[in-house]
Image 1 (cartoon, helix red, strand yellow):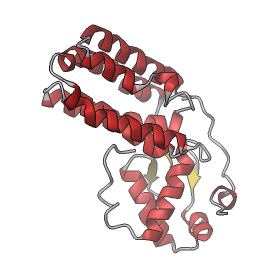
Image 2 (cartoon, helix red, strand yellow):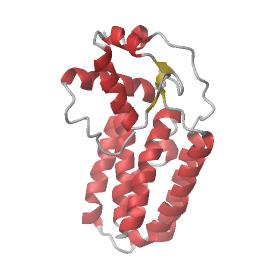
Image 3 (cartoon, helix red, strand yellow):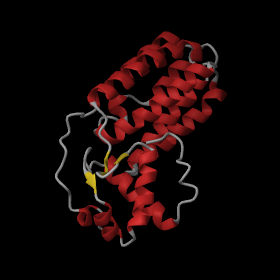
Length: 234
């Protein structure tokens, strides 16, 4: 899942956008497990469109790394390895806590106001059941926060890692991966505006550790699901 919109999103028709969102939500809500096959013919029949149409949606999901496309084997829900997941989050644990003292020394309340607004939007998405949006807003928060340290190279690294983490949380996350179980971002902002760089660093390290521990990487691959039941509309 990308922290920024896919380039294909702009050109998507309303129908394709709805199907894309339906499949995305099914992955994030774990109605489709990692490794689940996504047969074009079955999905096309389920959504009442051509195989060409469903292929466009799957290609968009593949660009965002939520789906894997393999020659002669078709599409399946992405299944990042346990090592990849641990390596990505370990890298974030090295970089992001180290940036917090730099941010604390530079920011004031006005500079943090956009981040507080992101927190509000993230909570609204969580409470509204829009989990994929909440994950994207959380990634954006981390990237914009890192940018306040004024180190472009490290900010680019955080952006890449946050994007890849979003995929991991979407696929392997539990209800503990977002929200208060991993800490409220507002608490971090309060530490930063008070100039408490060391405490903010500790908070970030704990926050990322809890996210890392919340991932259920051993989730089994399900047999081919009943797509009509998963995507049934009221």
